[in-house]
Amino acid sequence: MAKQKRSVQRIALCGLLTALMLVLGYVESMLPAVPGIPGIKLGLSNGVLIFAIYLLDIPTAFALMALKIVLSGLMFSGVSAMMYAAAGGLLSMIAMSLLSRVRGLHMVTVSMAGGAMHNAGQVLMAMLVLQTPKLVYYLAILLVVGLVTGLLIGLAANIAIRHLKSSKIRFN
Image 1 (cartoon, helix red, strand yellow):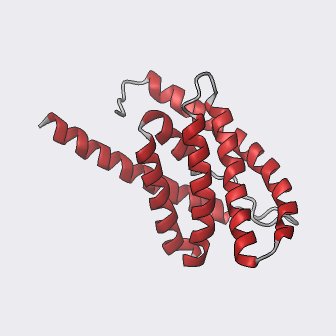
Image 2 (image 1 turned 90 degrees about the vertical axis):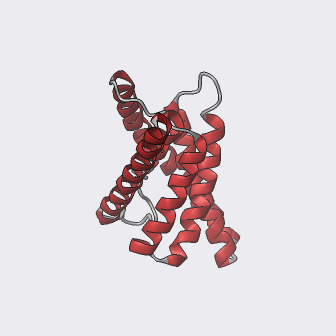
């Protein structure tokens, strides 16, 4: 019975995290765009994925990412935007999953790599779809932006995770 209760709690937690990512994505979509630099976002839902990587497990984090991509694509951005989100999300999650296992590497650094790889994945997808290698020049700007936004999200996630670890709440 205890195992079934933990399973139900985990499903409920994943539902809450998915909802949180969707809300954060929606709020982020309402923020004004940076003039002259299209496609720049903070990546607020990345903080939830960092949480999942460090406090749950990597397969759960991948499942949450997939749910966020599909649901936000269907609700907010459309099916065509899903392939860009999937390319960025997959590259980001692979990088963060691998780097999170490197002993001594801080989660802020992992988040920064995730931000940069997300932008790299989206630009690579755009290069494939649009059949233009010239987008590689835009990648340089977006890599820097990804590092900065990854830093901000990583710092916020680090504070939240430290607080949650000091509480009596158990996640595994």
